[in-house]
Image (cartoon, rainbow, N blue to C red; front, top):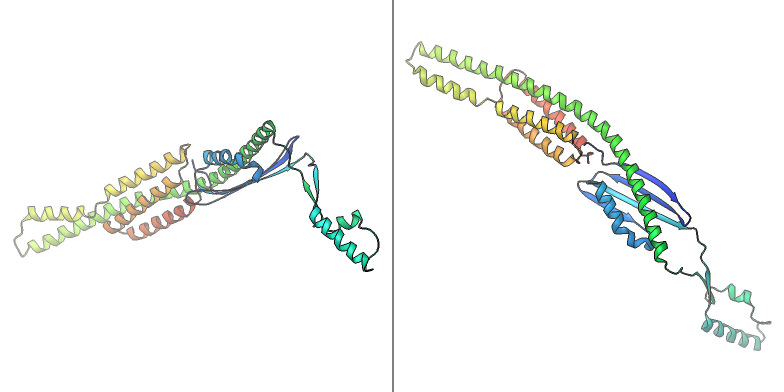
Length: 297
């Protein structure tokens, strides 16, 4: 299946306990590279989230971020720094004795000094049942976000396949034209050699059987039937991979390397009118396909 490696999905999942936000981005990468941003309070969920990503994705750089806003109101904890308060009271008493200040130390004075009083949210007591429910909600949100991402990647993949299929058909046409041009070129070479031998035989005795074998050997050196057969097989394999359910980006990239190798060999062996132009066109299409395949999972 041809599926794009790029995509984006974002959703918000709400229940009676919290609001969960999930954002996932995916871009091209040779292998699967997962970057997770998960709150510390959900650290135990990370292995399961990573497993969900690895189950759905095989290639690409993926960034997944989870945010959680709890609905429960935390009970504040107020603490007095007694050592600081005692030192402050003693300093004010000394200042009062010298007539520098008047009046007693008030609660408002302490509240204006962050060193005297600290106010913190009291950590809620761990509840295994609540934690399990929260983990399940997070996993459900991640599953939905990955499903949305997958849908986007499949839509983009359908466009990629349409482009790659059109170029595959063009390559099939080019390789058939190359085979025909090479056959004509080989026949031309044989005819030219036979004519040359006929001219020489008018003046010198020649071994016609040996000359005929040599002409055949020369012609065989420009025979590209094996390369054409392998190229056709690569095109058929390409179509099969495109139809299968498995991720095929790496295999398609390998097939393109093999097809490029066959085209280079054909270019070095074939001799005929228009062969060079056909080779250039085929290599240009292979390069365009290679660029597109870099986007395929």
